Length: 214
Ligand code: C5P
Image 1 (cartoon, rainbow, N blue to C red):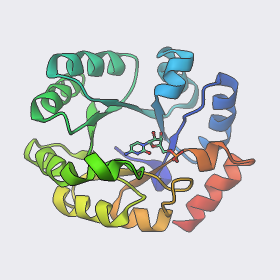
Image 2: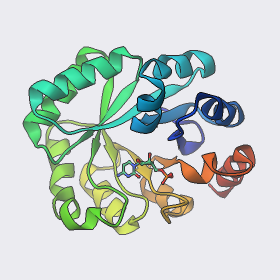
Image 3: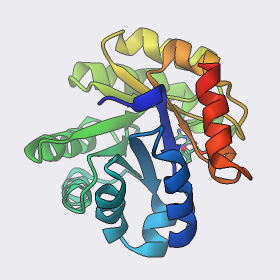
Image 4: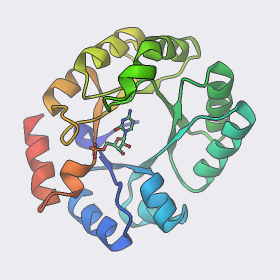
């Protein structure tokens, strides 16, 4: 995946006019938008294809898929059929669940991102202790794309060490959650940024400022 300016917009708004206003201002600089449950549940899954058609961007569906293999397969297939180019899948469910998601994405000529560790403080309790094993599982399964936290640069660096330089890491947590873009991009290929852009009084200026820091 090629991410323009190494920034992915996390479009976690729930109103279409607001979403389009932000996309109008940011898509001259960006080609990758992460949509998640907030916008999809508010506006319906057809918003994925609408955004793609209206802005010529690639969409990462952040549905943090975390079910048994048979259910993961269905979630991944349906999401990709709604137009998403890739989908984020949790790793803690184990290799059978992740493999089902990976196989279904490949059947659709699309990709999964394997979520190793989350960016919020609460993730330290349950996810952090197994994150390195999840990353290693991804490597063993031949997965190329990973999600790892910008808020914990030491953890991000560790995940990079495990998955290797050829892997593609996207990293949430820059801005409101405390991560710094320059530190993040030392180890990640792209930063995922939401609130500091879409809640800004001037999303375009905020984005330009971020790009100038890279
Ligand atoms: O608003 P903010 O920049 O904190 O948005 C970060 C985005 O990345 C949100 O959509 C959040 O759900 C997502 N995310 C995260 N940590 C992960 C995976 C995804 O913050 N490990």
